[in-house]
Length: 311
Image (cartoon, rainbow, N blue to C red):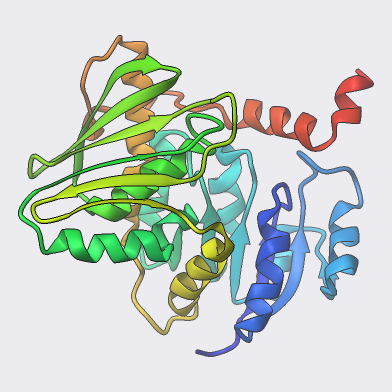
């Protein structure tokens, strides 16, 4: 695989710092960083660049687009992902958008449209690529019938999207309908595929941290796994970088990849409508979905608690 010059946009989460050594070990060069300051204080990008041995802290997205082959966008405000991606799409730079890719159908449709127009664009949760999901997905593909359950803790969307991704990775694309079936500590969400298969998700806050986990019931085998978190990022980067380099097809087309976010949005509507089943193609284009700006404010207070105390 050819070596890529890579840019990191918005350094909100721990992901950019975790990606840097892995990308370098793969032979890529992290060439530039840019941070809008929605979460981090002024000067954070320059500090990050110095700490990680990165040459350039860019003043604009357009400046970065001239210097990189691919970009990883990690804004924890998912509502700005389309705007962050646009200059790179227009410049022909490959784009990876960290999870959740978008919180409303309008933004998701823009991502899909860009890919249809020829852009190199992907993203989402790294849980799709972990060995445990891939191994079981291979087994499930050979079965006539399967039921699976996946879950995690923390919240319904920013973290819950990992559980949606695991279930989607196990059963494949083709989610048709989502239904909230109850809340017992966490939300229980039933997903139905076009071929009639079903899966269950447990998402939402818990008293303690829970690992990423799944149960699978197949025709000839029953299984359970917890994800080994030590290889989450390397598994994802090894899967997506050949595509970003133009040397492999997309791990999954954006139209199929985006079923994960659409399913989570449909679940939110189903909760609001007291368990009414919601088809993915019924999600209103004008529906606000999940509020990325509010989450970014919340995340900023978690990352910098002194700011909250000083208000």
